[in-house]
Length: 218
Image 1 (tube, rainbow, N blue to C red):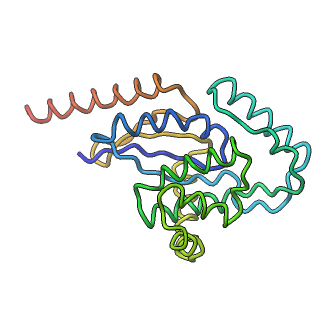
Image 2: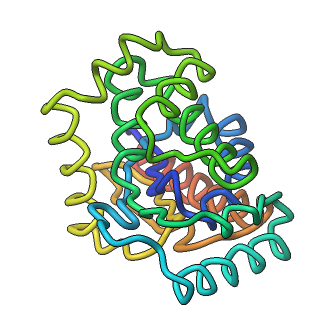
Image 3: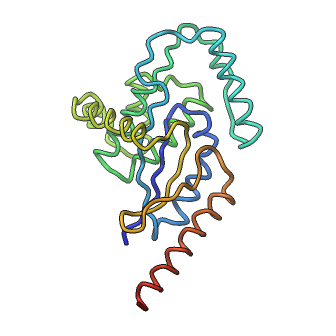
């Protein structure tokens, strides 16, 4: 059976930043058994209105909660910005562009964008910033910049958003484990600790191994 971990995330989702160390550990632990399929969720794609004071307060409350629970670092000078448009489509498209160029660079770029936006107060809606981060994640900067602008990349990004909606995922991070033969199971819909994630995945793998053994003996 071909099984995989399906990870729904957004580069500008604070809970995904909180989950980033957990996901990096999970990818390493299960890479020989469960390759990761990354699907970009689209937290705020197409936003056009600047973030107002009410929106800043709402987001900052989330950041503080993630800091307390996950221990990730945030640069709160972000909230001193004026006129910032919180559109997550450009960053999502950046990860899709990475996936199209070199699939093994998509997750590293996702993690790099997380850090740049939340811990370094970089503008990850800016194409030049995204290209620089892509280079830091191991992609050729000029080739990435070209891929990011392609209509095919825009369409693939929109397809990821549609898959997320069709799957019924409404929050990030979300992690699903499974395969076509045995079906899929939810590992988490939202942030969880590394221990809880590993417990869920290990339980699924144990059930699958038991099912495979029974099938072989039939």
